[in-house]
Image 1 (cartoon, helix red, strand yellow):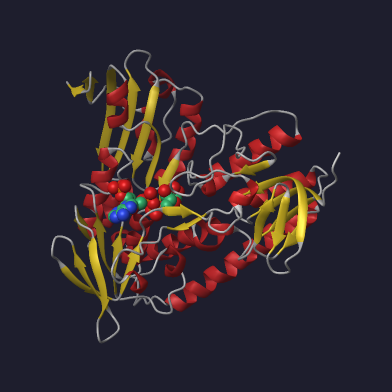
Image 2 (cartoon, protein in one colour):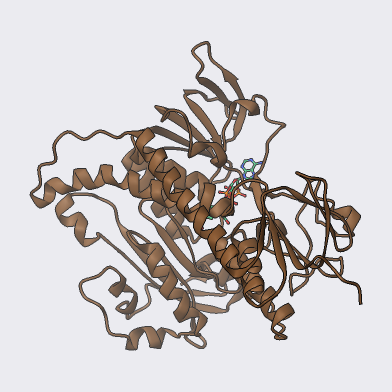
Length: 462
Ligand code: NDP
């Protein structure tokens, strides 16, 4: 039997990599993990965590305004970008430390270096040139914002990698894209006082979400002052004499803004990783191809998280790591379950969703019952805000199973988590009907929509 330096070598210190390394080490395996940048990966360093902190920061502007309706007089307010960036940095540094502590407490070797494959079971530590061997290797190197080198002036644009740490808060920004990142940052920056324009190539933002949520959010964003240009793309970016950006769109609009941010999807980080040397196959987008157990085409080498481009979400990467551990170290073959993943868009108001959209269900199911409520959230009655909350259940008329649950409004992300439990458990509309309401909440509407708002038969609304 060949002997190796390590039982497991993990490349990449993000959510999936750290989880697999930590748990394997805690099971007594000899583990090393290599990270070239900062432990915590995209989620902790320049993704979910700092994003949510910035969402909190940006919500204060509406909170201050809302306060008047409840009897408060708020004095002059002022926002300090540098203080927010510094506070964010302190928090992510703390979390980074916790990730490393968890790894070292479990007994894993923490290597601060880029690591590349040089053959089956062989990894090169780039900082020293040393070659180490491992019985199993997990590739969890994540992804990065998709580059758009073909766009004239692309070097003048920023991505979500840079936006968290801009030296100054821009007075104006054009954000390209209509997905999670574009929408979340449009709302964050608007809340911080930036003049925001969003440009999206499709007919309506958030193409993979239920139409009601997409339209509801679009309307709310426009009402609060975010400009949204649909069915258009950036044609070219150039620099103005004062250092600002001039943008021409394909439809012929010209905009002058402080910053241009591209949020056009993310690309797996597989270049120069030695995949060919190890015999690992990738798809046309560079994502590592894996089987149902996250096994690559090379024996003993696994890939998890964004680098496989299955579902680019932190909890999915962590789940894939835990399935790897079950399969390889607990003799319990477990393949990741990617069905019914609840998700939230931290726009303002939020979107929370799980399961099929009405459009997806209408294409697959003969008859649907759609339960839909649109109402003014209670807080808005005194604050005077015009925003509406939307809730929607997509139900299979044949067996009453709830196929999709969609919420647009405050705390929708929190609701999506619990709706996810219900749908995963196979809840029917009758289970919702039997559930007592929590009053007064917005979520109670989910269990008090007794009659269908409309039906869909063979794809047609009736
Ligand atoms: P998304 O896939 O969400 O959105 C990409 C957007 O860019 C889409 O609107 C897409 O349009 C558009 N697009 C893609 N290519 C082009 C192009 N060549 N020209 C013009 N438009 C283009 O990616 P994001 O970058 O927003 O986020 C990356 C991933 O990170 C997400 O998929 C998500 O999984 C994850 N994420 C999750 C968050 C959360 O859970 N809250 C928050 C942030 C990110 P179209 O729709 O027409 O294809």
